[in-house]
Each structure stands twice: as C-alpha cells, then as structure tokens.
Image (cartoon, rainbow, N blue to C red; front, side, top):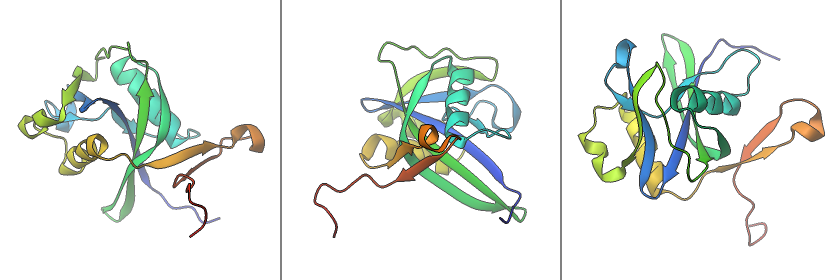
Length: 163
C-alpha cells in the first residue's frame, strides 16, 4: 500500500425541512463566519465517526450518518486536502447547543443563506445542495462482517435492475 500525507476534514449536514444546522465560529481565522459543524479526522478514526464526533462536540447532539452528500478535493501547498460532508439525522426533538468553539448553533432556512458570511463558497454550496437535492451516496457498514471499521459509500441500489 502507498501512503500519502493528506489533510482530511469532515462535516455533518443536518437538515430540517428547508433549513440546515449551521454553526458560527467563535475563534481562529474563521471567527464570526458560518459553516457546517466540522473538523479534522483523528488518527485511528473513520471519517464518518469524526463527523459525528464534531457534531456532538460543537452542537451537543448525537446523530446517525445517512450517507455522503459532498466531497471537496484540492491541493493545499502540494498536499491533497479532502473534505467529506455527511448527511446526518438527529432526533426530531434534539436542540443544538453551541460549545466553546462556536458562538451559535442553529437551523438556518435556505432563504437566509445569502445574508451570511460563510467560511467558504464550497461550504455554502454544500449547504444549498443539501436542501435542494435528494441524492446522496448510501453508507453500508460492514464492520460486523469484517471485524474492523469498514464502510462502503456507494450509489443506492437501482430499483430497475442493471442497465
């Protein structure tokens, strides 16, 4: 196997009707800007689990990954930088509570997105597309069968059979 150093980030996209759970950064270079609950993947952690951890840390809510909504890739000073955004469901009565990393954590209607100062155009696009699209890569968890963390993200099975 060939190993490559990589910057690997994740986000949790939580949708309620035509709103998305957004957080407002409290510190750092994105202070005051809006985005999805996000962060980096730790060593020994699956990216999907990192997205759920970040959601719990930044918003105080637990979730369940439904699938992959977006993947952003770029080169950052010659190093691959991959960002995976997972569609996540939370309990209907769950209320996000911001932690020490974010000043606000709330559901924002899509018609308010253009009024926000975003972390990036890409993150805004991910949020808009999450409201408007019904398609995502489904997640199939093979951990129990394989005996170690193993998840496949793929197109949902076609109802019409093979093409």
